[in-house]
Length: 189
View (tube, helix red, strand yellow):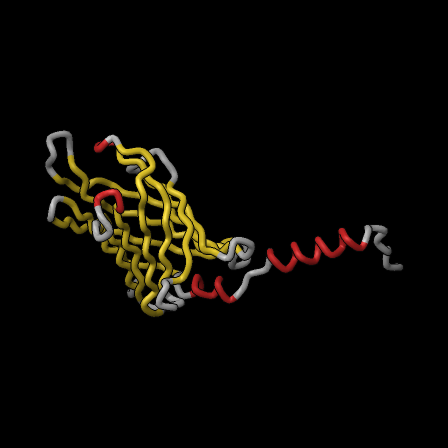
């Protein structure tokens, strides 16, 4: 069997080579390997100067040859009922993060059973140069306050192979307005 020669113009071949290089996982994708597996998750809701903590589980896996990480979270969350009383409710969420080689930025999406929208965010490593911390920014709606496209910060800190956390800040309420924390500890039998 003989090799078939391409009749494509050299300019096209160079574009294909550039595309092939951009599509490959890089050192930025290595962070995701620390996050795969099963986790115990403390979900902390911050509001009105109080905190409500609930327990969840997460199963994380790599997608598409390590290009993306998917977190599948299930458990409970404290949420207000129609009278404003906090109560536990069933909770499920999916977060997908990746590194976009072309944009040179991390990107992600988050969706859950508590909302009907998808949160999208983009970020880079922390300015202090910590390769295990990424600050993402995106927009979110807040129907209770009638706010559309409020600025949000999603801070990811991978502390080690056994723990990492997400902190969610509602920037419309101030830079230090922590709304949620997801504290991941590696599941132990």
